[in-house]
Image (cartoon, rainbow, N blue to C red; front, side, top):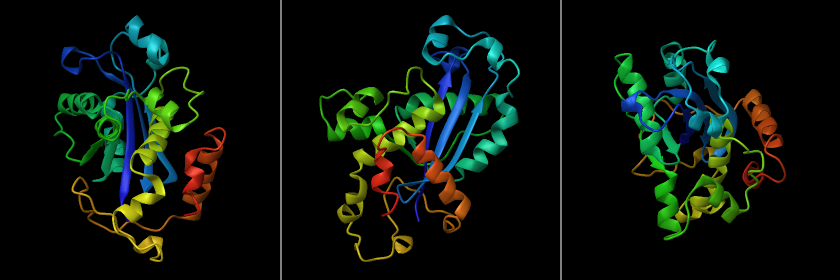
Amino acid sequence: MTREIVLDTETTGLDPLGGDRIVEIGCVELFNHVPTGSHFHTYINPDRDMPEAAYKVHGLSEQFLSDKPLFAAIREEFLAFLQDSTLIIHNAPFDLGFLNAELAAINFPPLKNPVIDTVELARQKHPGARVGLDALCKHYGIDNSRRTLHGALLDSQILAEVYLELIGGRQVAMALGLSDSQPADQQVIEKKTYAPRKNPAPPLTKQQQSGHARLLQSLGKQPIWNRYSNS
């Protein structure tokens, strides 16, 4: 089975080398392109002020973040969640630049995970079209009405839906030459961007299946994952 992590961050600005910091991380887990309901989410104290321009984007104030953990405090749990899985990120250089800057600040090496940038995927599939997350949601008919402000977990959930559309959804198995009659737990999708896992992924537990069902209910009317949850 292939494990992927859809990831998004919110920050104090645009330049990690100029002193901007991460204030929120949101991640959603996929197994064989199906959401499990497992996720990682945390707010982070950036240990600095919050510029007005950034606050208008995500609505996270300096006061709200003042009692949240520092990045160093969440680093172990965050990396344990990522494991060696492929990361799905919209405009990957931005988020990776911030994550690696945070890791460097506490003397840890940069992330080595394989990465799929959905901006590049969208440009390849829709040359000349707008590839912002909102534009892609409109193109694919994905409900993003809850996205009045940017939020790392919500954006990662929406991005997962967009990603499934970009790779062709259920048709990806046919595109990769997999048999429809082959059991799903025996189908292994291989891409050059994927790193081999050290251990085989376990089957979904009842708790993960229940969490997946709750996640689908939270995504509004007819989330695209409903098409794949019983596949």
